Length: 81
Image (cartoon, rainbow, N blue to C red):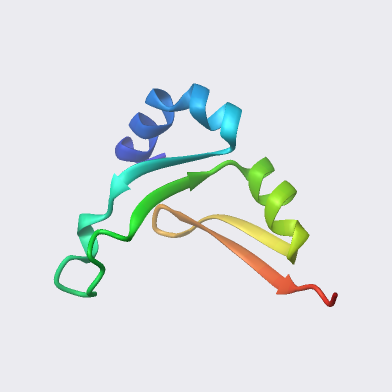
């Protein structure tokens, strides 16, 4: 696990376990690449949160840990309502 991800997880452990997600703050890595006015933030989601909340709208096909550098990839399919 990358150091910044581990540090964020350790300092936000209680919030992560209670809410299932944790926002670390503004994502400055996209400055100069996208016009965002501070709207983009880094968010960590607990796998249980994804399964419990996102599955209301999508079928969770696969979760691929570390698929894109430090990012997990969640493959979903829209459910028919």
